[in-house]
Image (cartoon, rainbow, N blue to C red; front, side, top):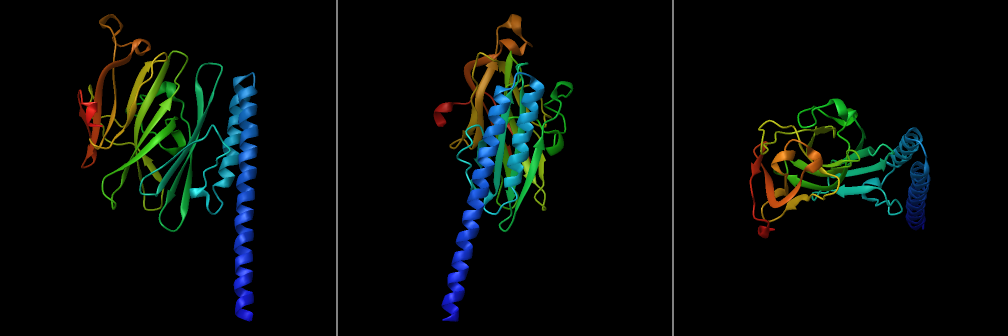
Length: 272
């Protein structure tokens, strides 16, 4: 009888804990949405930034709860969530459009080591003064983007994760970014890799800048086992001015091998 009572109490406690966690997540989602909507409605950029920061602070509180790694935050429409195929990494990002034409970004990286989850907050850098393709940008001075895809490369003992993201740079141009992230034994994310591109052999990340009027593809190609994206080009008289760059109907690929990303020119996307 005592054993049955003990089991019953455990079940009740587990059910209560789960309900309590769900209540916390629902509260977080509601509070996040209120702050985000306030940011959208704000007339000044300073208020937009302040309210978006409050939304990020609220989301951070949820990352301390059990079960957060698998919770989908379904009520938050403006939150991008991507999970690696090995189930070890989850990245949450969102942005708010400013009156200046720029975006302010917030993000979190969750790393699951099989037992516990470590959450790291990402804080956007002042990008105007940086060489974005070569700058050392970590969690405290993050590139800033909405990541829409994460793909694992390398082997299970030495995984390397490729992040594809979008950045609404300003009112004239957008950016796509291909970023590498690995993790220290303690679960700290380390951004940056060794990338070869069409014009350089020593990039830390790949940044593609193009006219705001165009759309650029950048995603993982399963058959090629590489990241494939539109090749950007323009007319000769506009060379060097990203406001006039856009896809030219050809595609480039980037594949990972032994610690470096290699450039593939004019790949056949029919292999996709």
